[in-house]
Length: 377
Ligand SMILES: Cc1ncc(COP(=O)(O)O)c(C=O)c1O
Image (cartoon, rainbow, N blue to C red; front, side):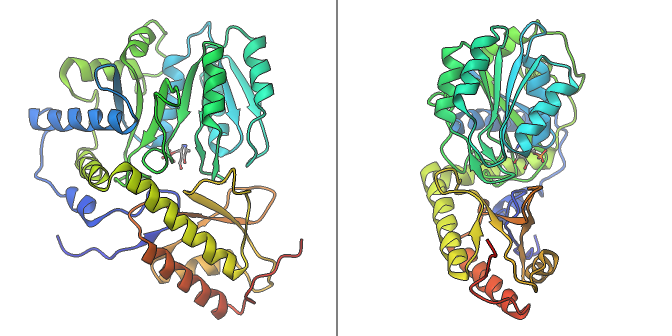
């Protein structure tokens, strides 16, 4: 394969991939009904269960063709029974999306809304679970990529367990990047995707859960033709295939990304991400940048940076100049403050982060922005 220019993506996925993952996309054409492909799917699904801390004997991975939102949609429409109900913790854009999906399917919804970047009030969650015995599920985003907030999963999981409620965790931007484990975190349904901390290509999403839970969900009236977890599971069980056309090459790339994940080792990957984030934090502080979240709520995966008050500062110009130099930064999502986001996930190294900080400083200087930066408040 001819060399592909390397770009450093500091947007929160699709993340920077290795040469190995890019090369894995180029394979001999194959019909996805062939046994060779069925074996690949089997391997990928079992590996994903193991990455989430599960055992393929008791747990399964229902792969779906689609982006992360497909997994959010599928789990909610497939597992919440009509006489049950779902509590959604909404403290960011993806918690909000979970609630929107629940509304779309007219599921009995108990939405607990908190300011973006704040942890949920656990007393309110406890009261809600206590007051509504029909609630069968609790859905929360592990890492709110809209702000960089890590939700307090152990405390939330304990409340779900105490109330006999199944826990749905969107680990779309955390699985593979920080520790998350279906057993220690008592997760019943864990959602993730190929193109974030696992460093594969976009196009696959999945739900990891107990096989028994899926068997039980077959009683629930089917609310979606395409994104039904039980139907997809049934196909995998019957013949190892996806129900509809899989993104074949993306599966090969994910298989390679998983091989690289095992080679690096989960702990080493967590350490690399944390180290990259720490270097970024030090560099941002030296330039005078402020960040949105206090460190106890901040993930080592994505940082929301407050925009400085310098009259010469303009996000689009900063973005464009950095893009020219091979670095992609990402706009903020907050309505009430001017921010931008820097993700430190993907196949990037300490040297890449240092190069980025040098490039950032050079662009700020070229734009006539005073360093250290200033904030009026
Ligand atoms: C936590 C989280 N959930 C859900 C999604 C939605 O994924 P997608 O944009 O791939 O549909 C994202 C995307 O960034 C995310 O970060």
